[in-house]
Length: 263
Image 1: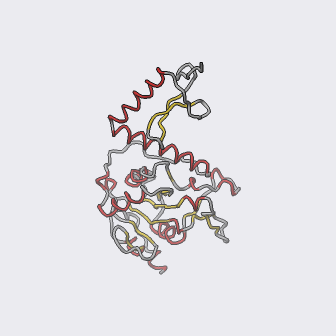
Image 2: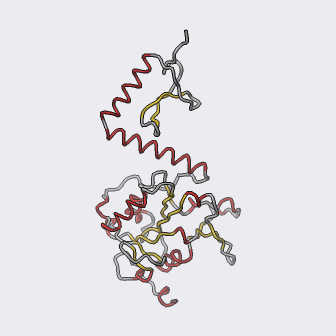
């Protein structure tokens, strides 16, 4: 008679399966464990009953599993999700303007798309205008001179759960009193290609401006309401043209005229 498996005696683990939407037993090598004994079946049944009786718990487990799968996919593509993140904030999402809130909600729920944020730090308005028009310079880490050190994560924060971006946008000024954030969108299919350009004069690697959605200024108490972009055809809220970058707003604390004079 075949001996059935026991969760504890056979060193099995119970994990939530995203596709099946339930808990299942697994061997240490990740293979699903079948033919459980009665005691182990009851343990699994109890945990899965909790999911059926608690839709919020099921939704939480689904999101956790989806995030874990996304993390592994990005890591296997060479994009490690270890970006800086604001872990605590008293700011609520009601600081987001209605038009921008609707746009961001749609954006972060796209499948197979990396959404990133570049906090502008000490960059001036002129610097921000250049990023919007010509792309984001990707710096090398620790003074390295090798091209292998050019990684998107050197200058762009991204996460296995794109919804994290919304929290980061309203807290962008927590990093070096940033005026706001450069919002990045890169389809997964492009991550497998070369997303960088090379400035032949400086040798700098630059994230293609095609992947830059625009600049989201952060104002008092984390209020965000608009995306300033250099792209053509984006003339509806929450988008505004690059010409409005220097408008008299609270965020424009270091207003410069260089960009206007160079036009």
